[in-house]
Image (cartoon, rainbow over all chains, first blue to last red; front, side):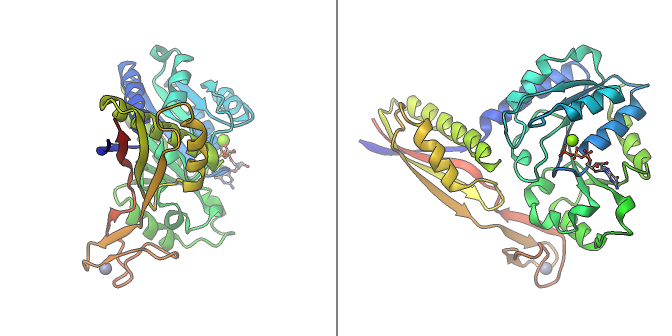
Length: 217
Length: 117
Ligand SMILES: Nc1nc2c(ncn2[C@@H]2O[C@H](COP(=O)(O)OP(=O)(O)OP(=O)(O)O)[C@@H](O)[C@H]2O)c(=O)[nH]1
Ligand SMILES: [Mg+2]
Ligand SMILES: [Zn+2]
């Protein structure tokens, strides 16, 4: 006998559940963890290098990278002073909670204060897959254009922190700050925003101060 | 790039459907009703493609996937207008406010399944 049964379950509920388990592990180790998402080339690794350089004298920092083909970004983070783990994503377009779990297995969590995950360069998919970090950080950059919040709403919806990188390029690239800000305000009015340049270092202190305030002392 | 994303999504859909069907001692799953908001990044055709492979050998083999696509709907908190954003920007078309509430468009769930017992 055919019969219709209600399910009403979020499609990625299994991933969400595992993300919660990851978060519990991270919390138990007393670590503050962030998930950095952005389009390719926005400056995720540059931001991580800057952050690790500035904070590694004070904190022990782990970095997890999900690059598709190389370990270049993990190597850059390691050179800056982080314990870096490269996870093989097999050509995936986002990291998921399973991959974070296996990366956590490769780290000595009890020896870390801060964990930085560099997600795969993609403005669409990563937002749907929770990992189990405390905060989602999205990096936008001036050369990408001012219309990105309007065009990629789901990414901006899920962010706790928005970094607007490459402000050193403002004199050279047309970028309507007001239009960008309108999109952000529409999608995520409470988001914490830092405008900065990883190249010149301008604006970095405010971001570093924010992270410092989040790390469990 | 996109296709791998739908593989993970399709695996998840199958897992949920099989779990609910087993709880009812179903012998077959014939239909799945999915509700997908416009702002959720999934492509129906790719899910269908993976579905045919993944469901093979399960009681969901050959089941029909029904996609209900929900257009994005925003509410302007300043003038009360409800609207679907156009392709240029998200702002309220009447008063250009950015104080908005997302009413619809972020759905991403399996609503129900049709089974035989
Ligand atoms: N002008 C300028 N260039 C920057 C800035 N930050 C990063 N870049 C440059 O942007 C390019 C990409 O930077 P990455 O840090 O590798 O970007 P990413 O987001 O990690 O890139 P993928 O991991 O490949 O997606 C590099 O050439 C950087 O030197 C900045 O603030 N200003
Ligand atoms: Mg990088
Ligand atoms: Zn209005």
